[in-house]
Image 1 (cartoon, rainbow over the protein chains, first blue to last red):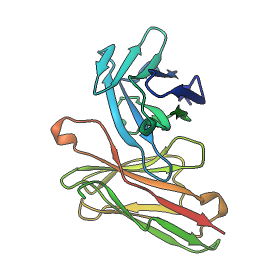
Image 2 (cartoon, helix red, strand yellow; image 1 turned 135 degrees about the horizontal axis):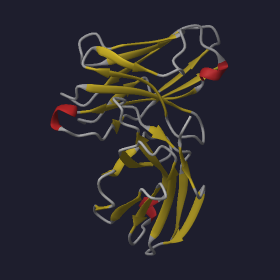
Image 3 (tube, each protein chain N blue to C red; image 1 turned 180 degrees about the vertical axis):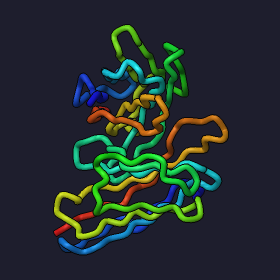
Length: 113
Length: 115
């Protein structure tokens, strides 16, 4: 079935630099997207979400961009900190009365001090 | 702590045994979800409750799996006749749909190891 995928499985960035994590989705009917951060041994932690009627949303140090034309989602983290080291997942909700989230495999972000 | 809680955090069982996990959602969240996550993968949806009604079930939820949310608050997930392939992290999440929110808040998970 259709699923969410990620372009890069691992990403290493220098502390203080900006990070960009990318995600491709294949279900054009998806109307809601979320980014989660998961640290080792913990459950996924909500970071930021975006609906399909938006193309950009900003939070604290994070920005999510949605390009529906090419079915692409990205998470930008400004001034990356060691505490940002984790696995990042994008997830989508396909709507159509379903409330389940479909997750990709994740990107591991490593911050170099 | 007002987040989603799950118990136990770890469970080791022998193949063929039954196990039951519990999830306590965030207070007043009317929607509750169960997911399964294997190493290196994203969570996979298992089932979803709105209050006490189980409204969605994944094909992953075989007949050995059963979930309940009898009073619309906590939920249990039972796996009967466990198999080694059931070894995974079982995650619970909740949402307060009445507020118009969609984001799902996850608990710490229960890690199941079937030997």
